[in-house]
Image (cartoon, rainbow, N blue to C red; front, side):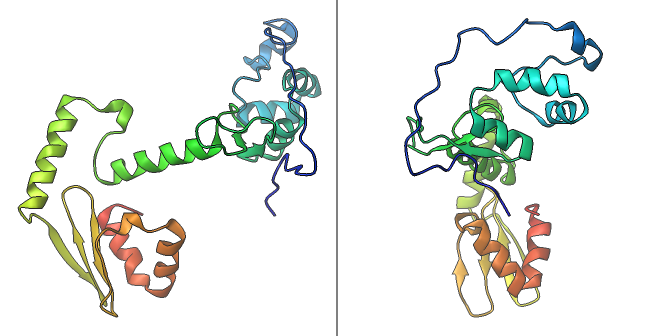
Length: 207
């Protein structure tokens, strides 16, 4: 069962005032052999393993994490926790990434956008340059001209376009112009009903 850390909807919790400086010395000689100091700015799996192996490291790191919900999520390996007292200023979501306290929903949206670009053979936005922009324009031109690859997988027909768009015609005649517009759970459900769809996605480089 997935735990939702910090979901205390009964009462709003006061914001914890944090010191501008991290707790304790910047470098603790007790942890020299770990080659890692307890830091709360980026919580990761390696720090969790060190906590399991060294009680002193866990105690030092725990003192640096002001949010009980974040600490609980970190120790359980959960991706996010709930922070009702500080919603995201952009999307108003209450979920925070356990790793760095950033907005979990915004993180997912950024990841989904870049994933769609990678499926189309395009670089992530942060990597976009003149060459990749010209390459995108060329792919769009080829798509307008009808340049595509059509394959049949059992009872479905799949068309792969230069921009990465995957067009699917299902056995009942339903025509999906762009499969990436469907929710992931809908695609998974379709693969359960039509195993050949999985073969098509492997061919297209989606799976």
